Image 1 (cartoon, helix red, strand yellow):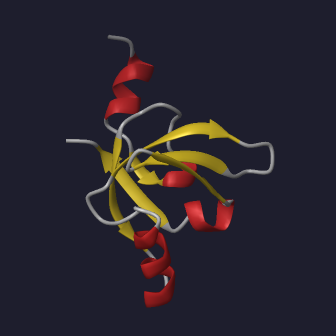
Image 2 (cartoon, rainbow, N blue to C red):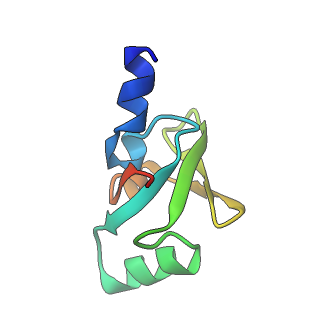
Image 3 (cartoon, rainbow, N blue to C red):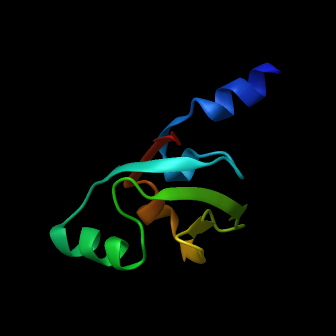
Length: 86
């Protein structure tokens, strides 16, 4: 296994920084209760399995969660913290 594969597997950080196609688990989301409820309604909640499908030119990401793909902007991605799926 090369170093880049090892780094991707042990990733911890914001969803904005997450590598593409790496299975991750949501650790927490920072923000108001309303913001966190909106994310939960989309399936993005603590313990949810997610992975970045595609990076957009504007800094957003297409994220796969709960069998759906959702588009999230840079400001939202910065507030979602993820780690190694396990």
